[in-house]
Length: 149
Image 1 (cartoon, rainbow, N blue to C red):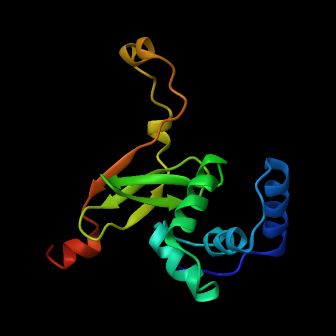
Image 2: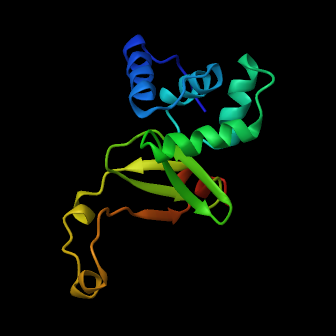
Image 3: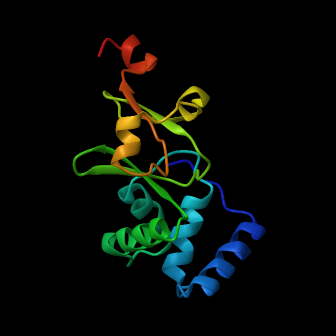
């Protein structure tokens, strides 16, 4: 997980969001937010835990999971499900899709306007209402392909 400290405005907005949503601002929650807010990658709870425990050595992995789920519920993060029991978090809340390497498990954000423009088939419209179109494509990235995996 690459990291650079969030800017002052981002932290002010986060504090305001916590206050407005009734979410108590704790040192742990603030440090978790700091660690994830400017990450350039998708990240696991374990990635966040390893970064946060450098500054808060007594923090537990349960606290990380609890806060990441809370951030997800409040719409500050989304989750990318890789396989049963394994998911990553994504702070990029703009509409996008994902490419996932089945070998190294790298996740890459992609835009796919053609998918977004597809008309929903009648069978799906009969099922109900679609609120979000999200595509997850799996394959082997070029880096792993060159390694012969």
